[in-house]
Image (cartoon, rainbow, N blue to C red; front, side):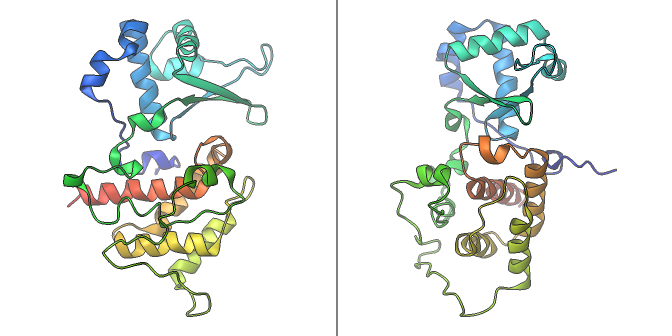
Length: 265
């Protein structure tokens, strides 16, 4: 029977650890070998959920306190060790936590998460590896002012419409031609998300669809969008807790799939 967990049905997810930096990092002096092993496991968990590790909270008694029992069992560590190590990581500025009273869980954010990400995912490709358009996909997607998370991330970046293949991308004028059936289905999927809703904007989301349709034809946009929406429905707080806005999260998800499809050649 197929799993309902979208993270088990998608391509492998990676995080980056530079050998030289790891061997000379402050973590080696601050933590013992067991604590360093737990840190690597947390990076792996964080890679699945955008740099966030979820820990359920005690209900009663001890309401409002993290319950590390399940996480300790999952990773194969002593529960008390996990608790004290999380406190240590907070002290050393490796983790920050927020409590969601509605979800009754803590969200531990791995600080400086971008340092553990592949250059592919952050639009910082080295010239020898750069492929036309990879660092322009996000920059071609404008974001609504109403979403402060995206606005902060986009501040100062005015490269919307930058070239993908050497020609300026002209914005699609409304009314020129009706959207394709697949594009219409893509819009309906985004509009169907209830609860913490997706900030649907036909212009911006149309750009996402057009860019991936033309640049990454191997990516099944509808299928991947369904998987991302399924994840959001299973983890509604991710729409609020994540540093990035929902549209940028979706673009990252599609880029992951594009990278996987490229590696399948």
